Image 1 (cartoon, helix red, strand yellow):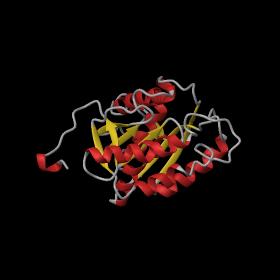
Image 2 (tube, rainbow, N blue to C red):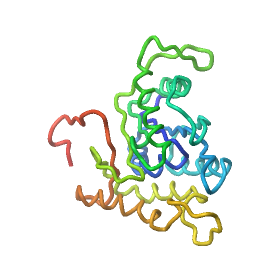
Image 3 (cartoon, one colour):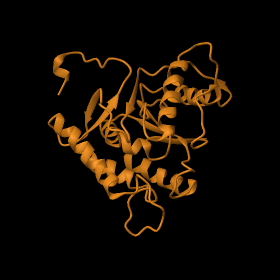
Image 4 (tube, rainbow, N blue to C red):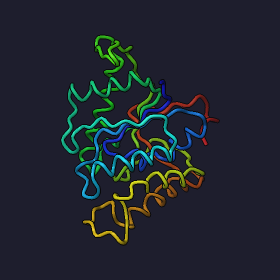
Amino acid sequence: MKLDILAFGAHPDDVELGAGGTIAKAIHEGKTVGIIDLTRGELGTRGTEHTRKEEAKVAGETLGVSVRENLGFADGFFRNDRAHQLEIIRLIRKYQPEIVLCNAKDDRHIDHGKGSALVSDACFLSGLLKIETESDGKPQEHWRPKQVYHYIQWKNSEPDFVVDVSGFMAVKLKSVFAYKTQFYDKDSKQPETPITSKNFTDSIEYRARDLGRLINVDYAEGFTTDRYVAVKSLFDLI
């Protein structure tokens, strides 16, 4: 299955938090989208890898993604090396996305920066003819996505561009809160973490609202890129 967008996240819930509105909007517009979780999030303070698996399934269905896979890399300990790159390359060649979304390049959680570099490097390597991979026993064709974009996460990074997601925040929030074990719950007896506070939960909406304010829309999500953002004309800008 060829996909328009393939979104990678170091942990289940990364993609929803960073790009849930953009993905929901793209699917609404007829694009096909897949999500690849690099780890099971097994080191998370709350929940287990089994609850995260079920929550990720619900979140993906909420957004309407066509594919969701988990590579099962070691949470906290995966590396940007040949073995891990080849696993990413196989998926890029399998789904042949035009656009890849991935973690922030620099963030509070060490897996976010590592995941960002791993996916970015694999996107480049996937286009090299002499790297040979197989899927279902058959050789894969080389494929390099046209664009790689990094969604903004914990750190309030300055975006290179923003996407108007007005009308899709409700779907984004529903997909995020599918991860019931991970976020604010006033009745929970589990240990507190930076993402279990009500302030963090509220920030999902107010950060999107603030980015929207800056471009005169209701809500927006921000992304960074290593290349110039190009438009066909000035009239493509909103």
